[in-house]
Image 1 (cartoon, rainbow, N blue to C red):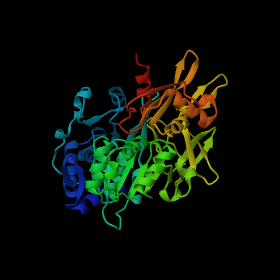
Image 2: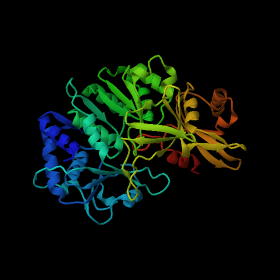
Image 3: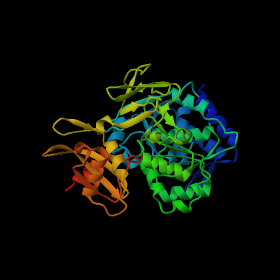
Image 4: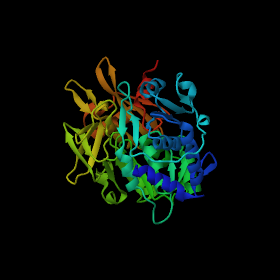
Amino acid sequence: MSFFLTKVLAALDDGGDRVLFHHHGGVTTYHQARDRLRRLHGGLGDVATLAVDLRNRPETILVQLAALLRGATVLLVPASAPRQDRLAVAEGAVVTDRPHDWPAGDVRTLDDLDGEPQPLDPPDTVRLLFPTGGTTGTPKLIRHSGIYDGMAYLFTPSPDGPGRTLLVAPMTHMTGNATVLGALLRHDTVVLHDGFDAGAVLEAIQEHRIDTLSLTPPRLAALLDHPALKKTDLSSVRSLSLGAAPLPPHRLAQALDVFGPVVGQGYGLTEAPMIASISAAELIDRPERLGSVGRIVPGMEARITDGEVEVRGLSMMDGYLGGPEIGAGWLRTGDLGRFDDEGYLYLLDRADDVVVVGEHGTKVPTTVVEHALATHPAVRSAAVFGRDTGDGRLLHAVVVATSEVTADDLKAHAREAFGQEHYVPAAVDFVDALPLTEVGKVDKRALAQLVTAP
């Protein structure tokens, strides 16, 4: 029997009347979740593959578990996936809260899944599929199995008693999925938010005495810049983890100052969720490490080949659907990086985001330019991408400003920071906010369309 599913069922049984989920002003206890899981399991019937297309709610994770207990392969459909991408990757049955977005077929809503409780007999393994981002075409499907049994060993109840986790990432994304399942295995309470609002996050931290949360860099910045921050009691937070994109060093320093020595960050991909991590203890009195995502975690290996990070090890995916097993081979991450002499990894940029400028073809990592612009006192956040013009491919910056500043001011700031004209944006636009994906990353595709629109 799957060790992961066995541990999940034991946690639901042991939880009793303790609250598992706070959601939309209501609560779901561990035993209520167990009973709902049984009804969903009965209502599903026999399915080979089930696509889960649901927003953040208790049933999202319970439908996933019910299907896994049926021995089905579960496809988690990202909340932000365009309709055509969802149709391209999903086969078999679908459980959704937006049935009008799906064509005729085995399309079900939660109301269709209220069956008679049946014995819950875990199969030998779990099989999950996560789509890639699909930024270069139809998304591929990533096969995961063993990582969930690894989670069952990693996440155990704390000797200090149950904790309180705040979840803002989508449950159908790897980060959100691992967060909620890890909290369940630890016997914690999960406060569910469907989407991100900085003010609501601060309220939840204080009201529910949140001790664990995970944020992307843009969402952390929104918290740090929110006017309610200074009057919010943050003393309950014991772990604030950051990831999904490189964090500007000055923002990490600010977070350490605001939240205390509880801030760390990690690096992973959907294909390999746990690659590197760094804790607050490793950052104290070591400002040069503020730009690092940490050392490679036990069980994983990494190397730099032609500037690109390659990884292999225990947290790897099984492979892509329809492709060979990944085995012990190296995976190209698509991230450019470097190691320092102590083994700390520094990410420079996504390989696809590097802009080749100038007659000599200088390769400019856009993340480096973004971080430099963000150090200007009048800049809240910045995004940089390549734009084709009559003079070739040039850097284009989009900035959220906090006070009066001009494009020439920011160009001068970049020129002073780098001493090279290639790193100076040719154009600077100002916006009220940078568009973000559902996961909380800056959506550069949407940004490029925004600034090039007539």
